[in-house]
Length: 410
Image (cartoon, rainbow, N blue to C red; front, side, top):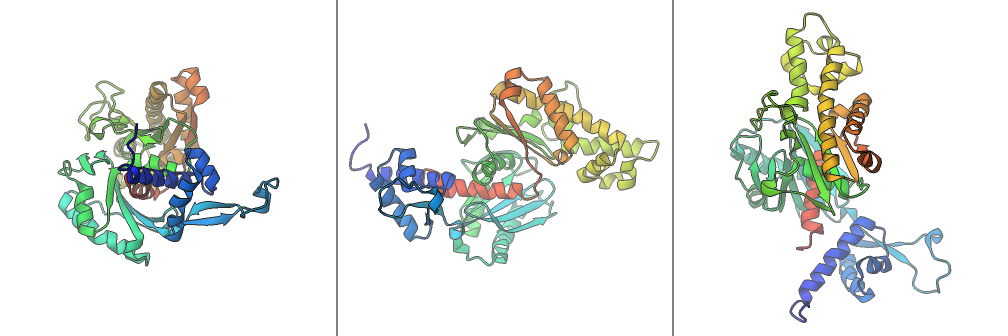
């Protein structure tokens, strides 16, 4: 039984948090609907909501005539509540393997500023920290927003990132493990900072900003420089021990296969089917091919080859590239089928540049269907997300929204 008196402030705080979440997810929503969803009394809703309206955080919307219950007795004009998007802003920074992308979003995830940089000299944690300390405030200033309007900053990257502690356990950048990036950066820029894995952040972005989740559990399958598949169950992303959950790219799918330079295993998914693996195999074909190909015309210098070159060659019918990608997607499909069989997700979101080509999407689905039970094929919804350069940065902003605005510990 809950104690009386001493716990009232805590109860009030918890109620405010629950009301914020309800309005954020279901707005526009009436006070009555909030009370029904949360099993709270009308006075509790009123005393919690009114201060947020006075602060400019929430606003009331009149219900259109066609949306009203005409059988209701006359009285106060029915209104619904929604957040004021420009009440707060959040900065997201994606420290990706190919460069850095930044996004400044409002409370509901709409971007008001964005930038990308090919900066890849992130060998030193300290030098990167210095760069972030200078570049994040500069980026915020370009949007001409007062710094006090920016409530939080999110920073994401590949690796075993403990979002709860704000700690980098391990990442592909040498010397970064063990650092508490959230604490270090927050102390230097004077804004609260949240840090997490880049794919874990993308699933939160899909949930909060895009409302793209069709059911629960959710798997987010992402193919980039590496491969990952993170999970959300009952609205909570799964971390696992050492924040290692979701690292499907380092599961071995071909014994005695090629060496993975990230994990040191042989024959893992990243070594066989990531963008890095695709480019490496296509680069070898440029070096050792004995006749010109479409890829040769697009990029004659193997050292300058990118995944964009590879996909353009595929679109133009390069047989060698098509063969390489077909083999890689077979591995990706088998791995994703294992996830479906193990977790039985209701929703699978698929993201990555290689899925900008429709035939790759079709092949992935075919491969998954080959290796899953009929129940998985019938009940799991697959959604291919259009590739977005700023999705990772928006994901970084979304973890800041969730941490500093929607969590229970307000």
